[in-house]
Structures are given as C-alpha cells and as structure tokens.
Amino acid sequence: AAPEGDFGGVLGAQLDKLSQVQAEGADAAQQLATGQATDVSSVVMAVERARLSMQLASQIRNKAVESYQEIFHTQV
Image (cartoon, rainbow, N blue to C red; front, side):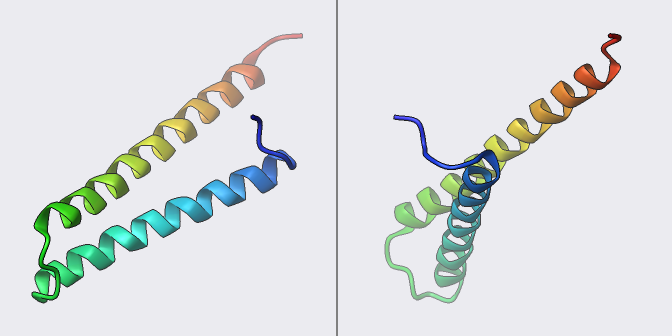
C-alpha cells in the first residue's frame, strides 16, 4: 500500500526513521565500548543496519540529484 500524505511529509517521516536507526546504532556501539552490551551480534546488527540505511539514503539522494539535473538540462 502506498503511504498517505504529500511527498514532503513522507520524506520527513523517512528521514526521522533514518535518524532513529542511526541513533540506535550509535547507542549500541557506545554500550559495547563501555561494557554494558553483552550480545555482540546485536550490536553488529544495529551498526550494520545504520550503515546500510545511510547508504540507501545517499543513493536515493544521488538519483534525485541526477534526475533534477537531467530535467534541468532538457531543452523544451
């Protein structure tokens, strides 16, 4: 099902989720560094999830910029 709302709202919600995943990864890494985390695999998963989320966001941004530049350079 398609998410409801305008493009800006959907984009804002996804950026909030990205921020949350990044914070969770940072918290997990900090807990491991301070000896509070006991399950190393869950820390690795949280950090990897954060890394992959950031890569995805970066690729989406790159494609959006490429599309904008292509549209901008299209002669009418």
